[in-house]
Image (cartoon, rainbow over all chains, first blue to last red; front, side, top):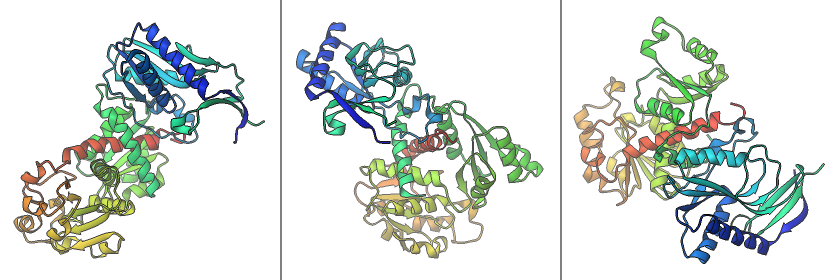
Length: 182
Length: 297
């Protein structure tokens, strides 16, 4: 099923500005960068987390560790998916005990990915705080989950699909609204 | 098994291995799935490693030891298997002394059946964990590597699974052992060379996989004495020196120290025998996830 492109809602500069703002908010909210660890949720949360780490370094001069989380093993829909998702590596380089963890993902939608990520994190240890940063919040939550840092709120219909494209994965930067054909 | 399936299993095992290093070694993926191990032959590592793999993935595992089961009352394999299935097992993992018995079981059962070794035929999960171990030590690829397999190839299902898997992945396999224990048709498999002398197989090898001398299968007098076997075919320091400097030495276990391998070699830095066991758990977790994690399971 090919998706129909409706509109580009954020361009490359827009993505960068949103991330720079989130980087500042992270530092401000946590009164610095002490104990902060960024955790990117595979797949597009990972380059976003790395970029946030870079922007924070430009502001504060501190290197924030970045971890990678694969949530496949924690999904609640494994038994209903037609094709089985491939498990990728989870790589969290530091002990998360007592840390301030910031989960990073591209789009917040039903909240189920974040639910799975929270379970996956808790299995790795007990952080002091977990916060959530997303580039796009498109609504339609199915679980009581909200983001602490949002790049842009985008009201959508359920027939629409938000596509975040990042240079590291897709060779371009930007956000598009696509639509499933009738 | 197609190459793409092997690659998927190896890749999945690479991702799951991290779980074994955690403080809390448990993921919820296979919650509510039940696995039964049915072993008609003795085993420590294969059975335990399947069971632990299941437990790390939150499946429920039970094991049937044939010596204390209804099999001693004369129950047939088919009836035992159907009974297990009727109790709601999602997967049966079996080891049996008859080649092809798992294939038979797979045809009569609706649940998944995993071969944990059948007779002198195959031991697929061991073949996969050996390939996984080689990959981890040789920069992620198997293509073009020279792998020497030394010993009793004839009776070894480990050797067969290794040979079939490795040659498909493009490795160059060299076997050596007593002529009576090397099946003559082995060289018909593309990528396999048989040698009479162990030295010829080991020379320049990237990996030396030493097979266990299966004393329980040696009643036919296929070689004179254990001592002579050890002297001519045993892997020792002098023979290992012929291999590449960074050679990796593997053994499927259990080892007969001083017979097919000297303690000096088994305890050297080249040996990765314990790591093979750890990797065995990762490979089996991958198999369980791929067989039970999806929709049809």
